[in-house]
Image (cartoon, rainbow, N blue to C red; front, side, top):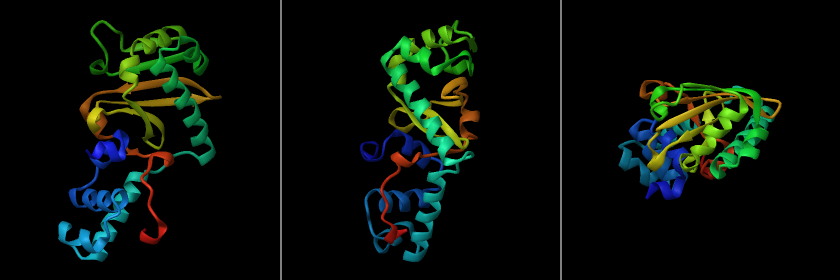
Length: 202
């Protein structure tokens, strides 16, 4: 399966590409198929197929809205949050959440009876720890130019989290589940989860 080769986050981003872009990108960047073999599949010349893959690559990479150093700081905090959430580790969650953290969520993201807004590190940590099974499907990704989280079993985007990180703590985050809102997100891959591409073929 493609998911075994590229991961859930990439599958989500691939879904934002046009069909020809997606084929050219996956065949070349993931499976190293040369452009002269891709060309007849996408009904383009090899040069045009290369341009399709290049355009797709730019979309997959996304565009960060903050400097690289800040992106790295965000990533460390988000990784710590995900690790704590997956393990249901209350102490680790409290360490990464700001004491006054606010969690907002679309109604569709929550079980019945759970409020759409939660405030305070203890309340948010307890709730997050209870979602440990779902957290195991989550992966970091570039969401609207910053480090966020996507939940996409089998590559189908169900949830996205946008997070505000200050002083290496999460001060706020939003869980987006509404299909219309999900479709408007700008998604991209973080450096360490992009497929390897040799510069000679770019």
